[in-house]
Image (cartoon, rainbow, N blue to C red; front, side, top):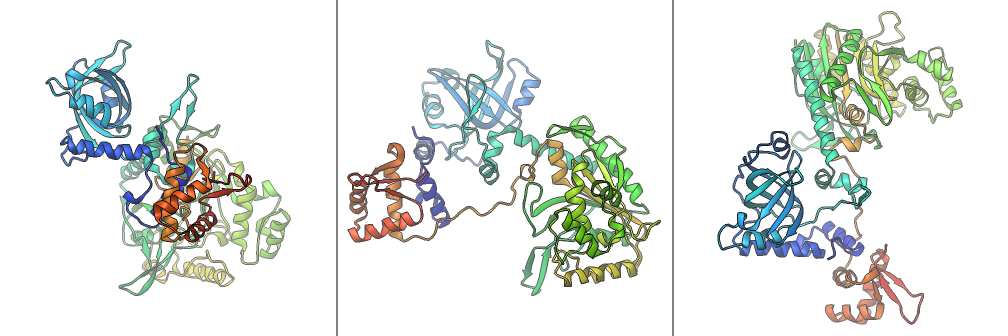
Length: 599
């Protein structure tokens, strides 16, 4: 039995899907065709393969295993993941949202009357791996001690029309045919979650992390809030925004790059502590640690400074890791990282001097650009001193900080929303928390002087005029809010995605996002109707032939006959399919020219 689409069928399906044709117009594999036939047979038996009724689940697989009671009646539902049919008795494996459990089917127990259709036809012939079923039965243990359910009632809940990837394990325990290709996994996360149990645990951990953080903030009586995603000015960070148009208002709007300025407006309004779990969007590069859509948590607390926020942050992370993981120690890619407080504190300019020998504070912008070039960094004339320092630290220093470390006291040019340092006005009261060489948190003693803030915004405008497309916009309304008075405040933002990466030992941000942004799937170019029909005809013929190749003249005669094409039209269609890479012509043997499916 052929379980997978041939390469040409795959290309054909991509093409047809790209043309928005109905699913029935796709080329189906033999397995998909058989499942649709089973679907119709179920309906003929009066069984609805997609019933609307509630199914009264009262137990889950792991719960049964943890609290086993011999003979107790239970009702479960989930996917059928395997079957071992042995005449009048069979075993199967059910996977629910908690785990897996073995099912035992006895024909006469399941069908006590004369009609054995439910066992002989439905269970043995018409159900497939991946189908959702509901069962009612009693708990028991097999002769080898495996907790199982003896099924007394069986309900079809949903017929799966596509086969799941089947992971096979050999005698040595090695997995074969595993669903491991990253692009497939990210595009079809629904399949990934079904066949790769560890993936589901990653996302459960993600939710636990956010809940633990939320509980910590709520214990301090801080208020969770929501702020706009569509904003007239993309403020709060130096980043390139996504732009959209609001038709009713006839104005340009931006997807938020940060929620900082709105949260600080709420501090102006009288809230003492506010926080938000926010989706932010930045129209920048994509790599293993950056996705254009990402989750951050930002918190702002009145009457505090960055010293208090460092203490608060490390206590929060110590509490979070203890509750979520049971320990403050985490292993990430072989490195043991300990989130137990307190964390080291290192001034950023001291770090740069230690690791590069460059005294950035003593250099002008031109001198610093020259030093960066000498160190092999890619810099250009649009980069001001702030970006040069950021590039220098990022490339030459960050990787040295594996254990949680606060990098503190950034130059004023790097922090347009941050209060000047109380002891050195050339610096700001800012910290970034680095873990394993990556930033996971950023915090300030917030700037609340409206005159100073406006001047900082104006400096950012000058950078924009030099060509820096990540410079901040001037937000006049935020300046107006500050003019009404904002108390001394400290704010902190933490990247949820990166934090979860560290806590789940994942090196790619795509692993901790259910549906990461992907490049569009490659589309097959437009083709004529004759070429589409010829492609479908050739695909069906070659897919059942070993090596997916055949004599060109024979295929030509078949296609001309089936589609009623002229020889001239066939030649045109053949050239079109070759051009698009959907077929190959092998003329190395002039006596037997072959047509084949490309690898």
